[in-house]
Image 1 (tube, rainbow, N blue to C red):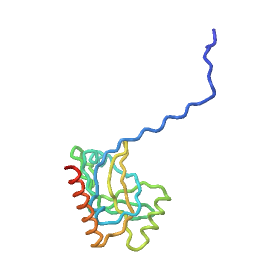
Image 2 (image 1 turned 135 degrees about the horizontal axis):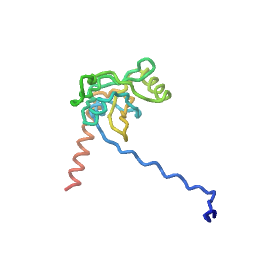
Image 3 (image 1 turned 45 degrees about the horizontal axis):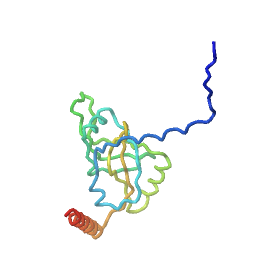
Image 4 (image 1 turned 135 degrees about the vertical axis):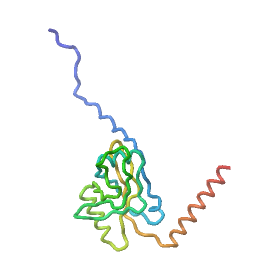
Length: 168
């Protein structure tokens, strides 16, 4: 047998950059952006059951009154409504059950220190799929005063007026 004449070089080619995972937005908490001043945001995984994943893919979630609390050293999502999956059988999930958030321990510690400060809360901003995984964007927030909300309205109205003038 003859040996192949191809020579192998020892230089390795650099690995290809990772492909960006597609993101599909499921639910957005626009009211939280209006009511609170957002200080820091985090991306957390959600611990879900099968029918919840299918219901989320069918766009069945609301974050209107949802919030996040520290329970037993873990962060949990409370009052997030994920509609029951219609095609599921008798073992469907409860729509507003408490759901565990999946974060690094260092991130949990940072959020915990923030929650210990007076006037700070943690709320979900949006739920989305990043590739096959359900994620929730959470934020450490501080409540806005009435005059801050009025400033937000004025800023939004002026931006809308500028866009209207530019489009003409």
